[in-house]
Length: 69
Image (cartoon, rainbow, N blue to C red; front, side, top):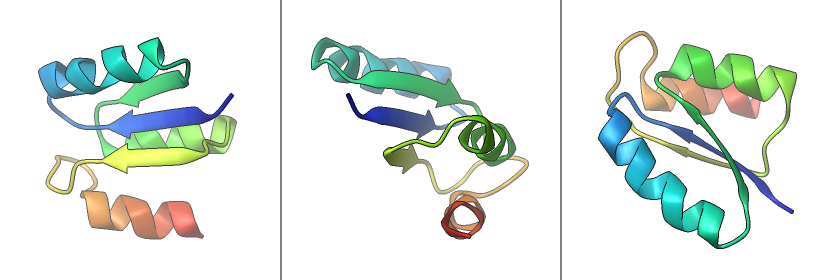
């Protein structure tokens, strides 16, 4: 089963994405910003990351660049 990480600072948006993805049979974790997302990814690699671009702490593009390393 694929593991998916959703990174977004808006909890309502994360929840809207999580529900249908879980119902489709995927394992999903959430992060409220890029720093939290990177920490989670280091602890447990994900097959797919869905991220917002504009967030506090660490922007989405910065997060993507760091995750690719």
